[in-house]
Length: 175
Image (cartoon, rainbow, N blue to C red):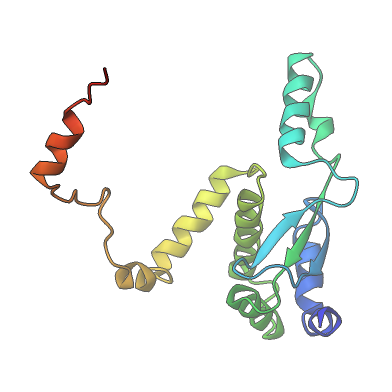
């Protein structure tokens, strides 16, 4: 199944590899993802995001330049071949929109979200916020927001029976 999906998404995988060069080691199709369009994972000898933050903090505390730690360990981008976001990106690429800024922003936004959900820090939060705001201004997610029901911040408290309150207040005396 993965070979079939890899062949079907070959152009998309190459596009992501090119667009995200320097950020990821490679792109591969995964059958482990169910709800997410993509995830960043480490190879067999990779360093976890938490350990990378720790090593960076140690380097900065010791007065070393933390820039040399930046590319020490690139993650693998695993994509879900059945997710609508991946399928939408694939249709954009097959429609010849590789050079379109919207397609690049789409790919970068997917990468940033995968980074966040996998425990990594976003390298450029300003541009991430800009891409999110652009998406919001287009109204592509406004339909989802309108359809969602307003959820109260805290659920209303149920009125308890007065007898139960009295029983809870009274202490039992043991002789």
